[in-house]
Length: 208
Image (cartoon, rainbow, N blue to C red; front, side, top):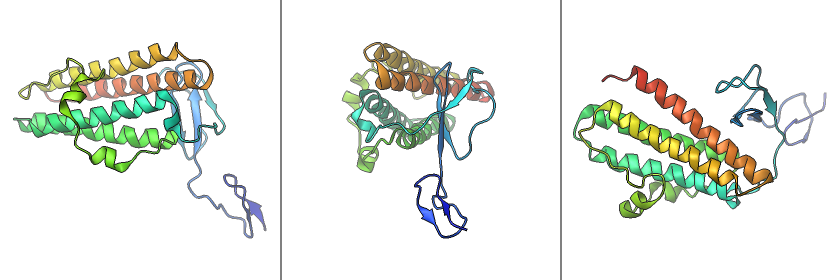
């Protein structure tokens, strides 16, 4: 029998789903961690235990029109290029492996930002070689240097400090806005909290 696709609302001749990749978005009411998935969430926030609330589509348009989203994308691009350059100069196999995992994580985070915030990212921006001097002058990595003979715990401490910078940056930025952009800042600060949690878990199990 005829049905209506729950996403695009197209009337279908058969009882089927038109948009196979239907995605839901939900957010923790406590820490503002934003998540997406193909099913409505059940339970509590995995970061803080707070209540989860499904949110309707927001009028973001191109997410790059929001300063918070632009800066989050730039942060992940900087992270990608920073760890890529560091990986290329690593002198020990174990250092190479950890730095490679960091830059792959940054690339994954870029893709997540694209999905969550409709951030239309030019693929050339990812492939383009970064200006190292400018990269090290920007706020995420200002003053940060990687010892290419660093131990694995030292590498994790660098990554954790950078993520903490991102968290602090978006919480400060939040105070400059109200409404939707303020919410975006809180969500992006929560993203950094999640990355910190993941890094801490990895660090505990990483070989010394």
